[in-house]
Length: 231
Image (tube, rainbow, N blue to C red; front, side):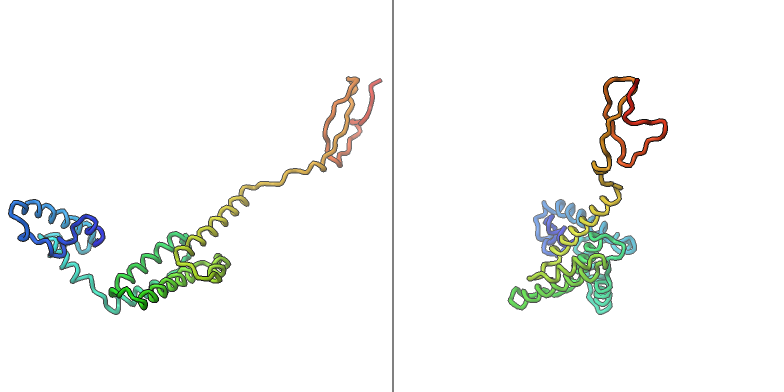
C-alpha cells in the first residue's frame, strides 16, 4: 500500500506531512478531495471483517495511524508462524510457478519484518546469505521428480540465485511436458521398404503386365497363379 501511495504522490498525506492547515485556504477543497480519494483506497484494501471499524474515518492520516497501531506489530507468534510456513512449504500438487509464487510471497513478508540495515560490507554478506537460503528453500520444497535438475544446480559454481534456479527448473519441466506429449500422440515408425517386394503380375486379358506390390511372405491360393499366360 505504501508503494501505491508513493506512486500516486499521496504518501505524505497519510504520514501527516501534508496537513490541511499547511496549505492556503483556497486549496482546502482540493485537499479534502485528495483526502477522500485516499480514504476510499484504504477502505478498499482492508478485509471485510475490519471494515466496520474504519468506515467512519474522516482523515486518511488518522485511519492510517489506527491501522498501523492495530496490525503493524511484530511479535514472536507472528514471526514463528511465518518461519513455520516457510520451512514447511512444499510443491506437492502445485505447479512450479504457483509454488515459486507462494514462496516469494512468504519471503517478502519476512523481509518486511526486518529492520533497515546499513549499506556496508556486513550487510552485503547478509544479503548473499539470504539469497542462498531462498535457493535452498526453493530446492528443498520441490518434488522428487526434479532431483536430477536440483543436483545439477547445486553443483554449479557460483550458485545461481533463486530466480535463475526457477528458470532452469521451468526449462526442465517444459522438456518433460514435450516428451510426454510426443509419447501420447501414438506415433509409429514407418514400415520399412524391405518388408515388401515388387512382383510382376501378368493379366490373362492383356499382353502386357501390371506391376504391383505384395508382402514378402505372401502365399497365393489355388485360384491365384503368378506368372500365368493367356492361351
